[in-house]
Image 1 (cartoon, rainbow over the protein chains, first blue to last red):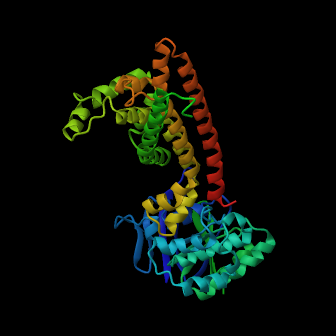
Image 2: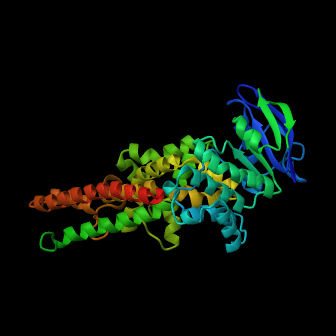
Length: 218
Length: 231
């Protein structure tokens, strides 16, 4: 699977004009704050509409100004992992995990849910509320919630930047696991060079609204 | 209570509670929809809708009552249609409930709107990225998180509805047992010699009911907030 992106969006300060392919694995997007990284993945998620362009995953068109296609966020099957975990505070951890499957009317296989719960090591917090979790636990639940919604692409917007270094070490392996075990594209925004080196299979740098350098590691 | 209040006084209090209950219950769904729309959407005519909702707060109540009478009276454009269906609102307790609901609506909408505005839009976006369409987002995310404001708005509207006087007496008059609510009863007792004592008792009762409603709404809103946020 792969995600191909090519669009232009005028912003107040500069134009965001990017074209790249994100193959299976982790495509890291780095750049200074204000370079338009979050805006870029909000465009992919369908939360911001670009001026023109084309975004598709393996023949499924998510946005196309030429074809007049603009799928709603809920139709894109994109799992979005945010910097702040953004768990729903009024639901338990288990309800948070299940809600994506419920929204999409996916079967509630206990084994699928259990598999991910065990993988992320969150079986002991299932009945808790998000306010009773540590930062690392919150982010693990957020990853599980995104995975259980059965995404075709995962977007991660600086998912580690609000965590201290110990918590970062706790979460990093899970992204390596996603990269190695899930055969879907993961777009991973980060300004942390170490994270990028460790995780990225493809690496782009965003500056002044344009993709500047490109390098393929591993 | 039977010793302390005379039968006409009890009748007025019970009628007020009935009128306020129905006014609140029936207007609540509208209050939630209008509060949500005002909090979340930009559209042409938004200011007009906002103004219309708040109008009863600013208009002299007697004017609101007069407009209701012209619209919902048996000769009025809405009242005549309802009469053909066998529903008469003017000069009946349901008319009192309508007047109270309209007068209390701005308070209800205001509390509900504020609580929807306080719901993090980013949580709603997160739900959409997980596959929720707008209605699911509303039912599963926005409404539960705005519940404290819905509770406050309802209780404030209830308290306001119990005390509504001007629009009510203009629209449905002051008929004992049908439309003589607590404030109308106070007014009537003040007009008759020797009625002072009854008026005093009802005034004290009105103060107690209003104070209780205010304190209850504060307390309940806090309770609901704690439950919603899981602390």
